[in-house]
Amino acid sequence: MKFTTIILAGGQSSRMGSNKALIPYFGKQLIQYSIDLGLQFTPDIIISANNRDFDYLHFPVVKDISAVKAPLAGVHSGLAASMTDWNLILTCDMPNITKELIDGLILELDEHVMMVLPAHDGFVEPLCGFYHKALIPLIESNLTAGKFSLLDLLGQAPHRLLEITGMPSEEITFLFKNVNEKRDLPG
Image (tube, rainbow, N blue to C red):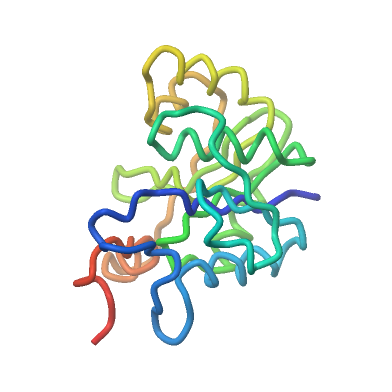
């Protein structure tokens, strides 16, 4: 199945103090983890960001269509720019997502759903999963209505959750770790 990887890198990075996507993390910039993961599946990568910091990467960079400061706006812009129906959404600040997790999500894709997301311990991880381009009108409606959470889509669109089980809780925590602050950096 052909899909595009959309990397969300448009956040304010206010807790980090500088663009966190460009921060070194174990030898490479945070954004490079998402790029490297995406390239294992497709050469089609879009970066969702509201600045020119990523032009040097030579992937299309799309700005938010909506003025809303929320990941939903980045997903919206990425889906609008994508040329494929299915799109893998990754955020630049979750460097530990694995190919095996994405392989599991791919197995859950079919024509009966519009989103496939990982879940664990009662939590859904909306910043790592597959979103169908057909969600654009619903996202636009939510943006207009002031519903800015990606989790709002779960009650509005057919979806499938891939329950992450069989791993110790500390491994699951590591898998979905967000690097948002300087204290999250090694050393």
